[in-house]
Image 1 (cartoon, helix red, strand yellow):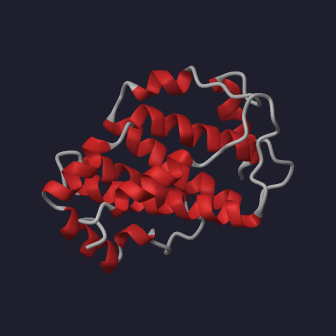
Image 2 (tube, helix red, strand yellow):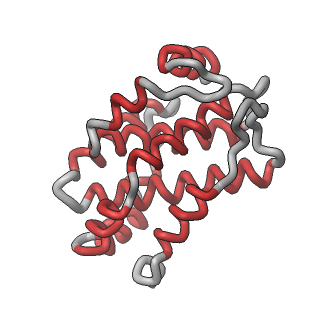
Amino acid sequence: MFLKSNGFDYILRVFMEKQIASNGERGEFQSQFELKHVAFLLKLLRIFIMAAFSTTDDSSIYTVVSLVRRQSTQDDNKMPEDSGSRFKELQKLMAGPIGESIISQIDYKQLQHKILTVISQILTKETMIFEDKLIIENALSLLVGCILHKNELLSDLYTFTSPSISSCEEFVLSGLLYCP
């Protein structure tokens, strides 16, 4: 019912319309609520988009992203929530036109830019809290899936800049040095 009532469209639109400080402003989310909201939106987007990928010709994207997520967890016994029975139910719902519709309606270039902007905003913070880590984890999983689906996004990643990040190299180094 949620998917048939354009629930995914709503989640995507809310995330894409989320205001992020720019034009030289110090880009930080102003409250813990905003952080939790962005983290939740990214998690929902990641779950729905990965479920859609898993039921189409792009199912290898889901497999690769799941492997990356599994390898990046600290606990070898912990499996990502994408492997549970609820996710398998979502996969069944996504099979067919609903999953294909989700994949085809996304403006991947715009979504990538928004994800990179959110990540760069977090990387400018002096201290990182739990919600920041959730945002980065979900954003990177989503970003990897998008780039695997649309390879041309890789060149946009290389040219990404923000008020706080002047190059892709600085972006990657900031992430590697700041996010243990």
